[in-house]
Image 1 (cartoon, helix red, strand yellow):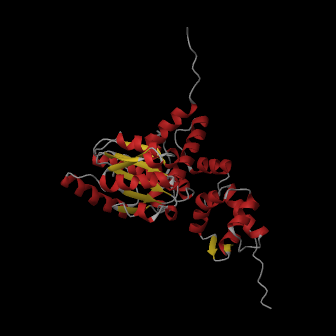
Image 2 (tube, one colour):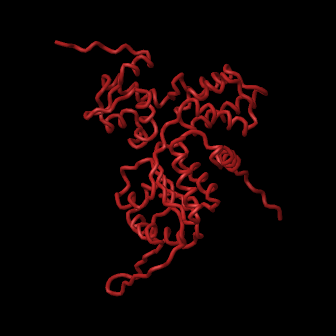
Image 3 (cartoon, one colour):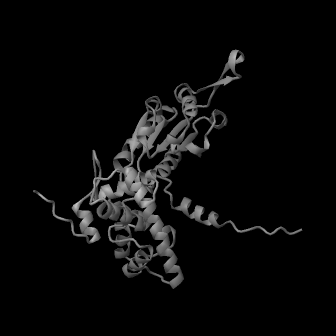
Length: 335
């Protein structure tokens, strides 16, 4: 009997996303200081024929932490296992994962700040001594079992460094912060991604996309794929600046890379709270957005642009924010 299978719509998009990820130092653009330090650590480990030290990567979403972990695995010629902190809810989950690793394998845990406390404590001895201590049973009948683990390397990534306990942070051989990218680096990333997607971009179109990418590779690639969609529909061989700007208008992305939700947050601070200061709880309630989403997704870029300032009393909109939204800032009453 023939079985009709439903299409899997996300498989192709996932494949494209993986193709755009860099696999070597030559393909990984930007973060030069970080790369130079990592090269030294990796080359030293290879010459000593020793496992690579555990690495902790932190920074905003979309800056390339997962890609960097893959590059490290490639440079070490090591297999890599990916998982998320949300998927390791029980001690048994991390125990099963660790005991199935190979010598020299890299274990990449994304969103490691979401690991439960018991799972983190299990990792302590695993990272330090390559041993796993399990408690079997409860009460007077409980006993401890010790398992030897392969000499693996943990590469952990987080957007919330402050949530990680000190004993966990202290077990990493090196900690790296990924910063926002220079626009020139984003342009090179757009050019590389366009080549992989078999797109031809005029130089001005490349610059226009890069200038709206929020200094973030993931955003640049997301915009580029939407430009590709328009070019495909219209049968364009070369994408010029006008076509790119048509896509920006369609996506409601302004000249600074702000999207509707960014402008909604700025507008709320300015019009509903008289420019601030306003606390995160009040702002979250006003714009109907989760506090974590504001803190992790929108606020870092608004701070980077200088449109928001953090003060002890809350967020304050700057003069630049008023000017960008075309709102006249009221004069302060000095009397």
